[in-house]
Image 1: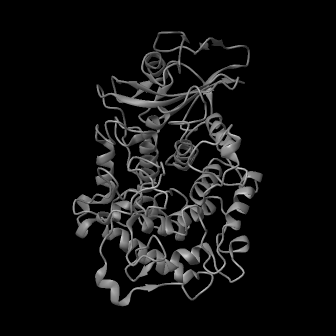
Image 2: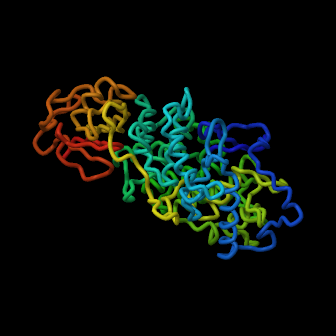
Image 3: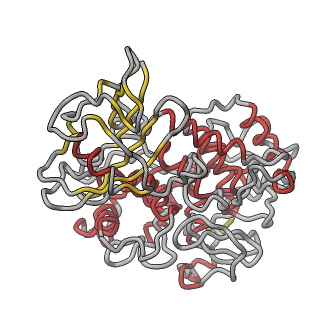
Length: 489
């Protein structure tokens, strides 16, 4: 997640979720609230478990603070470090991004401005990394923008697929940075279809889950670096932040909260609780961001962070700690307990966690008259280059995942169009090496990548998680479809 922090704390880069020690947070990103100094209070400092009333007040005031971060042009995101993770916090707190406007100017609502930014050809940068697209996917979804259909040419799901590691299947982005893989799972599993269904095929979900499990440290936690296959790394301490993210990634991928790996992670977090505050003591010290990520992981797994294992002998809980970090009525959260002013990223992480959110949430129904819950491109634009996300599963465990670039000739396309383009314009290359028939407007796909139909074992196709049906070159495809091909009965 993008945020700034103190020198001893984890930090995400502006382009993603890599976390390394960084300079003290940039004051340019902190909204001055000096006027509140005379009446700043830390809610919950004298109480134990946060009450529903306290949580409600925290959400209301937290949303108010995040609204104050909106720029005059309606934006939350821009070049460098930005506040676009606010969309995930807004959604968790029940506020639709389209309802967030500067001075009531609906033409500059946060959703429209963010969508326009994501659709810009030059976004995110000249040298993007996978976490740019994962961040965009999670926040677009929370804002009510279908991430696969931002525009006729911008498909964030396909952008993520392009970073699949062929040599290390299941990893996305630089394999040594495990966070690119865990946020791929969060984005691809958490950003459901508009109807609320799984967008990606089970084979891809399984590949991601396998890698996440393999990176769990012996103490039950995770860190941002790859640990799989490295006994020293696996025996090193996990951190609070990535443990929360990894738990959430497993749970949004369908792993139950009774799974042994989730239980081990839960025990890891429990062991880090501070008795007199309810905070988790992270590798980077006690801070709002680390605690927010941990609570969001528990939330995503349906584990109550205020009962049972997460209530200390003194009656304190992680939610209680987070609320104690909030300035009220200003609504912002401080990063460290010793800070005297709110910090934007701490406020986002804190609010999302207190509101019960994971790392994204389905967009709330807007209150703005006539505003739909979702916005999305309705079709391809003839002559405009686009991308589709494609996976090919030959039934032997040799899963291929790629983004396919092509230029449609109309508002719809066909599976034949996609397969033809995949031979020469797939990233990573090699997703489709051969197809039979190789040409034609229609006809059953009888062989793919050298694997031929055999009796009831045939090539089948699914789009956006739909049921698999016989693959035919004439199978229609729509803008933003996530296409899965599978050989089997």
